[in-house]
Length: 221
Image 1 (cartoon, rainbow, N blue to C red):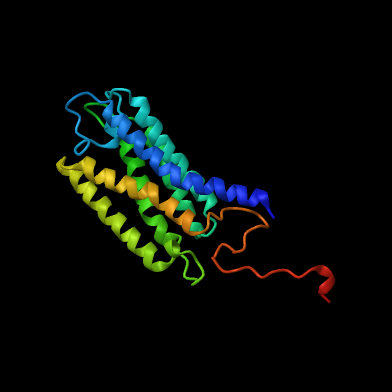
Image 2: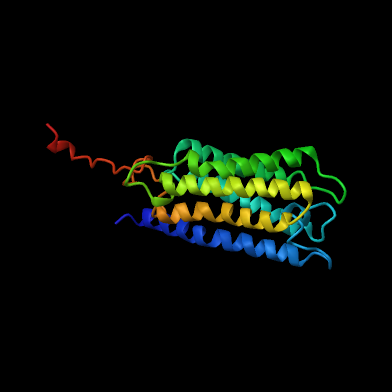
């Protein structure tokens, strides 16, 4: 029995379940620490991490945690196509940029807009970019689920962009979008049996197709 392989899969399963819960709890804590008058349905996550925010380090840590989760799962999810993993990792890197370019009470740095746009575009498109057509691939990376999710995310991102322009319900839409973005890598990880990058141990190749079992050398003529 490969105890190391089972141990790694167990740790990844725990991470897949815990990461979204921790990040959601951190968001609620950060918003709860804001002064009276802070409306999470109208304010963005960046507002709670802004230079003017109370205890801004809490939300900044949450944003960095999101970035880390995207980067880690981009490495783990070998069942996802390379293009999808690159976009997932790019989204994580962009979230680090968001954390490093906080907004102020009366201004939003241009680089913050750029990082936010890159993050949401990359994270909205990674499911369809990484989909697999193999029947043996996990269901979240097959075309039906991947295309549907990317379409929903792109629609939400468009709605969020309009809400920012009109300064209405920005927080609500961003919370919904962020929740889906944080949760979906966990869904893929769990559905794939938490099989990540285990050289020489995985029973599937990166396309989701079963790998051929090698015969012992002495049986090969």
